[in-house]
Length: 415
Image (cartoon, rainbow, N blue to C red; front, side, top):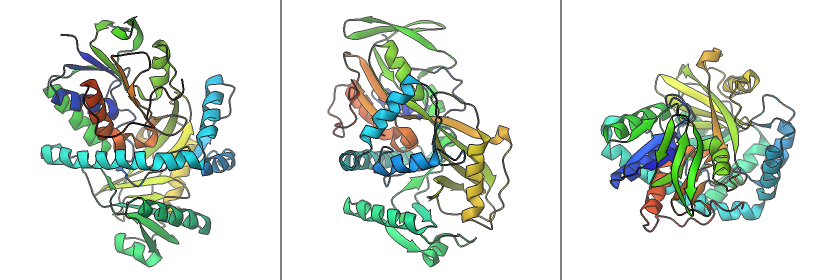
């Protein structure tokens, strides 16, 4: 019996494997990295049904142009002569319009709510996992009048779409952060959001799948494929050939390159983000986003993770310390009492979030193939959307009705 081969061992690939093995499918997971530290292990770990607006939104164009002139800004595209980047930017520009946002809101909301429900099931099924799921909501903290208007408008949109959003003043914030001053005009709080420890989740998932017989092939690069008609028969790797029954492409920021080997177009850019852990002193209790600087704050008791930036960098993984400084400087701008210490370079996590031009993931069958599926392009929402995406991929794999309508996530939308 030939296995289903999942190409990409991030959290999207592991949740795809998780739901497939529940169906009794033989699964192998291959990854070009060591599967120890990757884009899935050091992010903010946020589960955010509140994030119903895709990255490609009208305001991102004007903000992106102004942010281009600051090496510490939250969103940055390094200008370079690169045909792939130029095409991606043009597609991003075309997608950043109100009609696209309006279409995206319900489908992102439904995918996110399914994912949160699956996380709750996962926690109940695996209490020994200790993934640190904290259902304490998310605060969007703001300091300026302009961003206050944006966040309150977004709160109205969320409430209109059935997601609770509470507008807080500075005094209200103290209820959620009693241990230190928060320098803010106010905040919007989404009580339905949650966060977890992504490293613990990833480690548990990998160990669990190994115990269930899933085979892992780290440090193994896919070089090409054997194809016949509408089927992929084998993957050619730098360690030999793997005969396959089906293939699921979960290659993150490298998915576009893999799609090229398979003969179809899958626009993708790596959006580099950074994070670092600190001693949580004085203790910050509430998971938050510092909105002007787009910095994510994820507390885990004695430790806390600060992360952010979206640096469109292709697959370049070098650390840009100016980007990290932008995150670090935001800490005391919002939490003046917090005892922040700039991290050593070895303490800085970096990861490439796979970004489609329209900010929506690709989920479904690849064009022209009957045994090749794609599950990639989740941008900053990988942890948040992984369980739902993995479940849907397993349903498609088994030719079952999917839990959700997939219109908007089509793999061939840029063909």
